[in-house]
Image 1 (cartoon, rainbow, N blue to C red):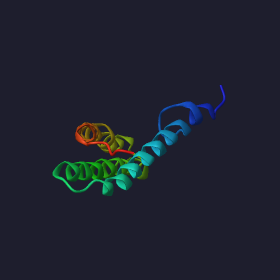
Image 2 (spheres, rainbow, N blue to C red; image 1 turned 90 degrees about the vertical axis):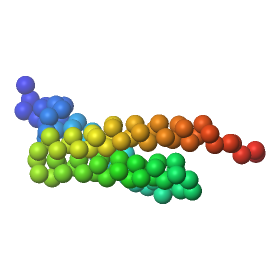
Image 3 (cartoon, rainbow, N blue to C red; image 1 turned 180 degrees about the vertical axis):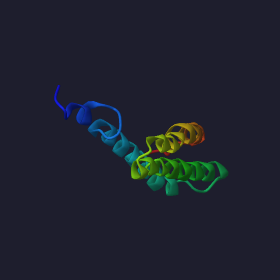
Length: 104
């Protein structure tokens, strides 16, 4: 077997596949942080904004695992992009459901 194959295809740190996965979730974190300021004006929108910021910050905090070489710290990010984001998605669904569309 080629000695470089595990570095490219395995899903253990360090590997190319794991690095791409981590990079993808970083884009998720930035999307939450950049979208959060768009929600304001009501208590519901404020909760969405706060939870989006929390989701993004937790997802970025999960990068500490890469920095210190302990991939168990990536679980912090999982809390952000799974746990907190599920609450964001539910609140967004509620907000969009009760918002009246504008006539074109």
